[in-house]
Structure formats: C-alpha cells, structure tokens
Length: 455
Image 1: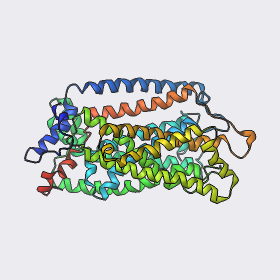
Image 2: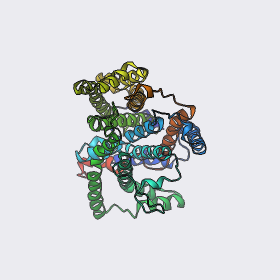
Image 3: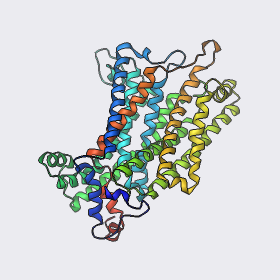
Image 4: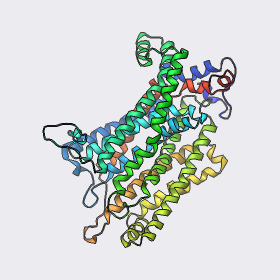
C-alpha cells in the first residue's frame, strides 16, 4: 500500500481527482481480496481471546457465578467493573458523532465512523455482564416490564432497572445513527462492486440511495435529528450508571459528585480507546492522508483536558469526604489510598492523571506511537478506576467484622481478557467489510468540497 508511506503531515491533495482518491483509499480496504498481514495476525489473536471468553461464560453458566471471585461483602466484583468500563468506552463515539457534529467541528469526519462502531461493539460487550451477573442468564427478560406468567414486574426504583432503559436506549439510537451515516457509503460500495453477491448485499443496506438532491435533503435533516437525540445520551447514560452507586448508603458511593465525574471519565476513556484504534488503523490500512496527525493531536488535547477534569474529581472526592464530617467517608477514602488496595489506587492515579500530562509536549501528542502507548495506559487506568470505586468501597463498610478482601479467580481474568476478544473481533470485521471512514463527509469538508459549496 504505497499510500501508507506518504508524509503524515501532508493534507489530502486538492484537485479534480481528490474525491476519487478518497473513495479509492477507503473502498479498497473492503474490496481487496486479502487484507494486510497485520489484520490476519490481529484477527487470529482476537479469535483466541473470543474462544476464551465464550468458554469462561459457559463455565460460569454451568457452575454458577460462584466461579467468579465475588464474595461477601464484595458481591459486585469483576462483572460490574467490566460493565461500567465498557459502557464508558462507548461514550466517545456518541460525543464525536453527535456533539461535535452539532458544534460543527469538521475534524470529526475522519474518525467518527469507527468511533461510532466502537460505541456499538462496546455496548455489546457491556450488556453481557449484567445478564450473566443476575445468576440466571437464561431469564434476562425478567429485567424488562413485559407480561409474564408469574406476574413479576421490575422494581422501577432500582438504579439497576434504570440501567436497562438507559443502555437499551443508548444502543438503539447509536445503531440508528451509525447505520444512517453509512447509507451513502454503502451506495458507493454497491456501485463499485465487481460480484453479484456484493452488489446485492450492499444494495440492500444502501436502501436505494442514488444521491439525488431530495435524498440528500431528507438525509441531512434526519441525521441532524438523530444527532440531537443522541447528544443528551452523552450526559444521561453514564449519569444513570453512576446512580447504581450514588443512590446507595455505602461510604465511598453515597456522593453527588458521581454523575459529572463518571461522564468526564467516560469521555476520557472513550477517546483513549479511539486513539488506540486509530493509530493502527491509519498505519495498516493506508489512511494517513485522511486520519492525519492533526486529528490525533486534537484527540490528545481532549484526552489531556478530560484527564485534568478526572484528576480534579479525584481530589474533590477527598475534600467532600473531609467536609462532610462523616468519619466513615473519611476512612473510606484514606483506606483507598493507603489500605490494602492502595496498589490499585496509585495505579489509577498514575495512568489517568500523570501519563496524560505528557501531551503538554507537542512532540509527544503529535507522535502516533506515543499517542498509542498513552491511550493504552489510560484504558488500563480507567479500568482500575472502576475497580477501585467498586471493590474498595464494598470490602470495608460500616462493620469491621464483615470486612473482606476481593481476590479475582482465573475465570474473572479470562472473562475480562476475553471481552476484548469479542470487541476486537467485531471491530476487525467492521474494518474489513464496512466503510470505516465516512467518505461522503470527508469529501464535503475537503478543500475541493468546500470550494464547490458542497458543505
């Protein structure tokens, strides 16, 4: 792929052939008979993790959730930690697609498509864990208010029930937004298809798109409406997830700072995952002319800003505990930093507060591989943040006689690692068979598109 060797700082060349170059660059990823060798290596590794994930879930179904390390008092262990982590990962997709679209931030066009895909796949991973954690995963429909033979109805005052509605709404709107944005690009794939099977398949999902003025008018109105619907979800979904903890009486959870703190952390971790996926994608699929260093730098600035907000929230937690005058709250936060889980707390601080500050240096935030490493470090830190919030608070509550120490089992670790296998399997299949860059939007905001008034 010769185009991967271009100067990464160089913008796409303007001119009459610019649109054709963008189309060729994106379409050939799905059209080429064999993807890059790196894709096969990554897909094979993801398949191994996916098999491990399915095996661990089967083991839990057969033996019960006691196969995990959950115990009293830490009844919520890795499953809920993983659930909150994956929900947070999915937030950057909605932010990039909807919020930045409404604020007319044109730089989003090169990265919004696979950020949206990341959202869908992260929600898929997240939804598995609560369903498994209920202990009877073959009865998940009990969480929905549907008539049944036992006249059982969900407890609508439970934050866990709020999660069901928030996450299902989030997934529905995100899928609609993702699919709608791909319709013009599906039509491009249909018109370029060289086999009947591909032409029919892409023709079905293109829904008869011909690119007429009327179709573009209706499309842009619908896209704007979906963006307006998706924007409140950025704030609401992870706020609702934070209510799982904030409405409890447990020290360390019973705090009003959680909703904005969780939202900032979700955007922080989500953007870190976006850059983690963007750097290899631009390298191995020859997208350096489309996903430029400028895009990576802007995302790194968002990571740095939200990292400062998250660091401020960490400090404010200690102040709120001190200012409350509640000895149980004070003990909980001192115990987080200097108790038996202190190693997890300081890992979280290092990954989420210290390492992102390296982006103050232009040479770091414009270096793709430094960007990749820091993004991966932030993902580790955000997982530890959820671990610290859940496990340290539960392990030492009001009664010292009921204190305990949570130790994950091999099944816990296999389930956590395997969930990444599911996520990367879905993402790699998306890269291989679907348009991973929004060609129509990139063209609209390219120099040639702006010159012709196509924006």
